[in-house]
Image 1: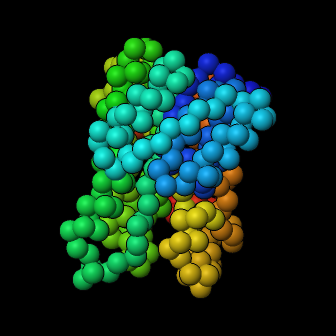
Image 2: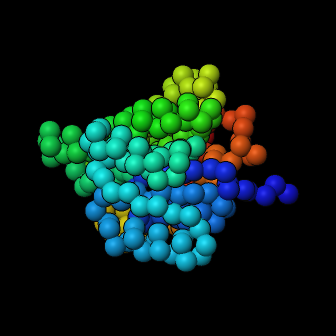
Length: 255
């Protein structure tokens, strides 16, 4: 049995105050990593998570910033690296649907908001992270995509699904480009997971409709996603794996 030991890893998880990001940050800390929790609007939740990790003996730092802006995304990465003494793993998890909108209701403002948060943040944070990873001589970038990137998403999710499809393919492209630097790039593609995302954007009726399409017959929990991120963060488990996107969806989509 392989023990997941991340005690020599310094990990930044963007968008980690709640949901999947919070679960990943907590699990990485429990595996021994130094973790930086990032938040933009959910300050109380982020502070509570850092306090919990520290109370359990973990190493946690906190950084605030709007990663939909390139300058801020780079600053968030640099601040995290400064706090931890370097950066080995970047989890590009920040993202949001923003709102459900059919084609006729999409305007430039919504387009820019969705694309900046879900696409620009990944590009800008990765650019900044690579500088630190090259200094360390290694690195792992883990991008959060979505089942929407594969199946087109649900009602009113055109922009979000398209943005997550970008993330999926950017993962493969960056894996090719950065392999020479000993930086692996992989992704995790969650299905329907019980997080504030669906509390905000999905009705109980819509969630039940989606649940019925899942072979495992249940909505996922953030904890169901954690193993995939730990797998890609640990060289002992995935040192020869790059350019892959792992589907975590209870069988709802099978590649």
